[in-house]
Image 1 (cartoon, protein in one colour):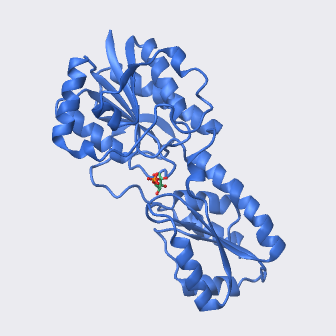
Image 2 (cartoon, protein in one colour; image 1 turned 45 degrees about the vertical axis):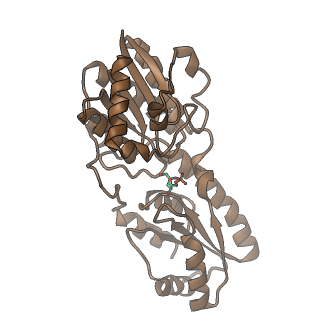
Image 3 (cartoon, rainbow, N blue to C red; image 1 turned 90 degrees about the vertical axis):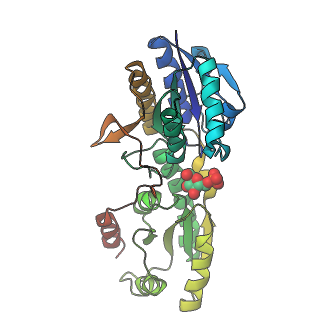
Length: 323
Ligand code: F6P
């Protein structure tokens, strides 16, 4: 029987478990013996590899996080460490690997394959939706709904007290999450790293609003992997306008929780496609959504800055709604 290893790597994303379940169950369908590895590449380095049967992934499709655990493994960037992993996988006769994660995780997988390791297929999972080559990454929809729920609640306080809020969402260097929830949450202004707005313009937009709003919600994309940008912006806006801004950083609440229908469905489809690709001896590819179709594509180029939000028309739309 062919042997397949699956691991989750990078930041957890709702729907990773649904993808894992799909990989394991499809694995047995395509006559693979399936193994899991705990904590991403760290588990591979530590030989923390165990058999996964279909029953082991029962009752996980609805769970957030990843039952395999995950991590951002720095040690895996060392070629000697990867050589040891390749050796281990050869001894275990594991010739196929599915990596569920983001582009950093895929970079590791591609190196492993190029250096003589197993065939690899990636499944894109990150709440940021910022992987080059795919229009969708597992977890984005659930994270957006989680953030939206929080925004709706903050709106109650904002309008009851006549307050202005900066709500900071994740997204790393991209504005996908900010725009998605900004439009759906009726935010007055959306700040993305791709289309910056000066503090002077923000103040002008707030003061010159035709409807003379007493409360405002500004969605701020974190625009890096370190939260807190909104605190500085609030201070700068106060200095400029005298207006008080409350800050709410949604942080890791956006990563958790039960995956929504979209994420469970796409994760299930991607999991099956990954295993089918390995069964067809394909390698060094990522499952992706392109032109709204499930497909296989190349891994993102190494050292890419991540997919950026480019659809300025959506921001224009929001300006119309909030004028
Ligand atoms: O990539 C997912 C993400 O949640 C980003 O939105 C965020 O910038 C980063 O991970 C946070 O990383 P960590 O889990 O290491 O705090």
